[in-house]
Length: 357
Image 1: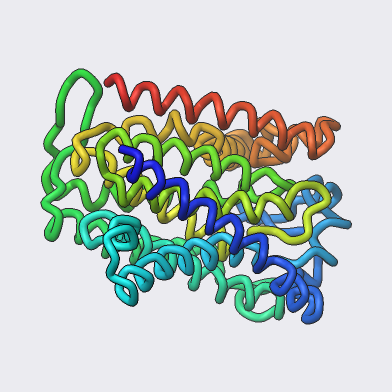
Image 2: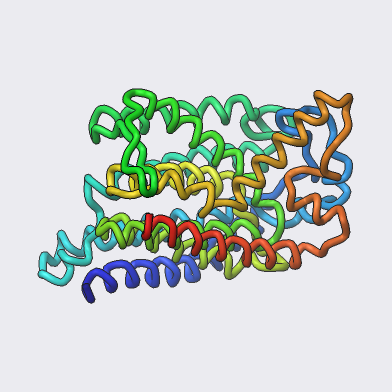
C-alpha cells in the first residue's frame, strides 16, 4: 500500500519539478521567436462568421502572449514516465522496478495518445503563429476534427480487438454489452471532449479544470488497483500544475492546441480504461467529473443551433459559456476561480459515484 502511494505521488512531484524547471527555458524561446498570434480574434468555428464580442474582449490578450505552453505539461509528464522506466532498466534494483509504471496493459495507450495528440497540436500551433495553414493560420477545424477522428478510430479499434472491450459499466447495474459499437461510441466521446478544448480561453482556467479532472481519474484508477494508470494520471496532474503555476493571471503563456488536444484525447482514453476494463464506471462518471468541459461544448452547440434555427438570435452574449460571463462584466479571475471551485466539486462527486457505484 505504501509503495503504491509513493509510486503515484513521487512521479507527480517529479513532473511538477521538471515543469517548473523547464518553463524559464521554454518561455525564453517562445518570447524570443514571438510565438503568438499575429492578429487577435477569431472566426466562429462551426457557425462561421465574425465574433465581434469575443474579439473586443481579447483584443489585447492574444498578441504578445505566447502559445504552446502545453509543452510544459506533456514534456514534463513524458520525461518523467520514460525517466522512471529507464531508471529501472539501468539500475534494476527492486525499488526502481517497483516505481516503474510504464506498462503495456495500463499506460502505453494513454501515453501514446498524449504524445500523438500533443505533436499534432504542436504542428497546428506552429502554423497558427506563422500565419500559415487555413485562414489566419493552423489547420482548419474540419481537418482537426478529421485528425482527431482518425486517432480515435485507431484507439477504439485497439480497445475492441486487442483489449476485448465490448461493454460499458453502469453503477448498480453491472455492464451493458455494446459489441462493436464501442468503437464509434469512443470516437463520439473523443470528438465531444476534444471540442471542449476551447476552455483554454482565460488565464488559469484550463489548467485548474484539467488538473481536477485528471486527479479524479487517478483516484478512480487507484481504487480499481490500476496503480500504473493512477501513477500516469498523477504525473499528468503534476505537469498541469507546473503549467498552471505560470498560467495564472497574468499568463506567461497559453496552453493552446498542443496542450488541449493531447489532454482531451488522453482523457477519453483514461475514462474508457477505468470503465469495464478496470471493473468500474469511468465513462458513466465522465460527464460528472468533467462537467465544466461538458458545459463548454453544450454552450457552443446551443449557440450554433439557436443562430441557425432562430434567424441569427443568440442564447449567450458569446460562446462558450466562460466568455459569456466575461461579456456580462465578470473579471477573468472571477470566472476562473469559480470554475475551479465547480471543477473540484464535480471531480469529488464523480469520484464518489465511481467508488460506491
